[in-house]
Length: 499
Image 1 (spheres, rainbow, N blue to C red):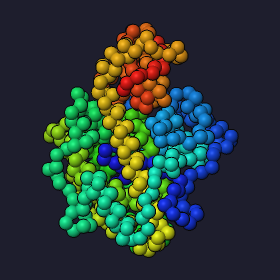
Image 2 (cartoon, helix red, strand yellow):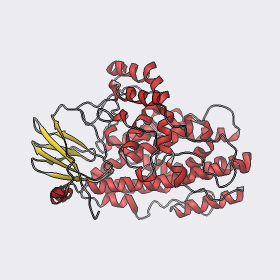
Image 3 (cartoon, rainbow, N blue to C red):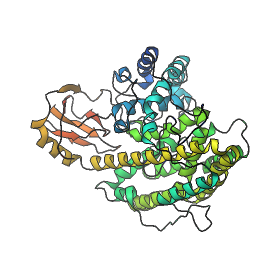
C-alpha cells in the first residue's frame, strides 16, 4: 500500500545526510533550461491536458486538466519552499508530474479503447513523451527541493541505532509494536481521534469522508504501480521480500481480491465513481505531491533506499490507520459502506509492517551497512514531514468547505477592505472548469448572475448569487461554474489580521 491514511503521504528531495554519504544517491536536478520552459508550455497546451466544461471526468483516464490557459507559462526555476507547499506552483507541478509518471503505466478506459482512442494516442504518443522527459527534471527540482532545508536527518549510524530509531518513531506516531516487538499493534476498538474524528464531526460528514476517499483513490485505483518499478533487476533477498508484498496487493493474481478492486467496491458502496481520476479536479496539492514522491523515487533508482524506508514506515502505520479509517467510514455511512478494503489493510499490514521492517529496512542495512542507513532514515523523515503537511492540508480543506456559508458572510464583511486589484471573468455553463488555489487570501464576488462553488466533490455545490462575496483562504482548492446563462466574477486580494 502506498497511500496515506490521514492525508496521503509525501514528496522528496535532495540529500542532507547527517554525516558523509557517498555521492550518487538521489538528488534533485539542475534548474530548468529555457528549452524546458518552452516544453512545459507546449505540454500544458495539449488537448487532453486542457480543461473542459465537466466537473468530473468519467470513462477517460487520459483527460487530466492541468489548469487554466497559461498554467504552463509560469516560472519554475526557483524551487518552492516549505511555506509555498500549498501554493499554485506546487499544484500545477503536481498535476504535470502525476501525468508524467502515469504515462509509464498502462491505463485503459472501462468502456473499451474505442471510447477514448484518440486521447490514448495523444497520452502515450511521441510528442507528449518527449515533452514529458524535457519538463520532468525541472519540476522535480521545484517540487521536492524544499525537503533539503526542511528535513534534518538524525545521527543514526548502526543497525542497532536504526532499530531503536524506527520503533521510537512509529511508537510516537501512535503505532507502537506489539508484545513481539516486530509487529505493529492494532486495536480495532480504539476510539477514533484526529482527522478521522474531525470528519465525523463535520456538518456534512459524508462530503468530508468522500473527499478523504478521493485522496486515497489517487493512488489506490492503481495500487502498487510505483512499487512495481522496483521489482526488476537483481538485488538479493530484499527483492523477493518486496515481491511478496506486491503479490498481496495484486490479490495473488485473482482480480476480485486485488486491492484496487476492493477499493472500487468501497467507493461504489457509498455512491462514488470508480473510474481512474474521475475526481481529478479534487485531488489536493499535498495528495499529488505525496503520491508523486513514491513515483519519483522509483523512477530514479538511486532513491530505492529512501523508498524502501518510506514504505516500511507507512506499511507499519497503515495497520492501525486503516482500522481507524474503517471505523470512521462506518460511523459516517453506517451499514451502506463496504469497508472490506480497510479491514483487509488493518489485517494484512500487520504482516507487511513486520516484513518491511525486518526484511527491507533492517535487511538493506545489514547487507549494505552504514553507507545507506542515512538514506533509509531520510526516507522516514521525509515521509513524517509530508504526512504532517498533508494532514494539515486536508483538515484545512474540510474545515473551509464545510463552512462556505460562514465564509460568504466573512467575505461580505471584508469587501470594503479588499485591494484595488480586481480581476474579472465571465463564466457560462459550458465554460472550461478547473480547480485551483490562490497564493494569498482572496475575495470572490459574483457581480451578476449566479455561480456554484465546488470546494469538494459534491452534488450540492455552494451557490453564490449576485452581490455575494466568498472568502477563499490561500491554498484552498476550489472551482467555479456558472449556475445562470452568464455569471460575472471578480477576484480581489484581501489581507486579514486574524485567521
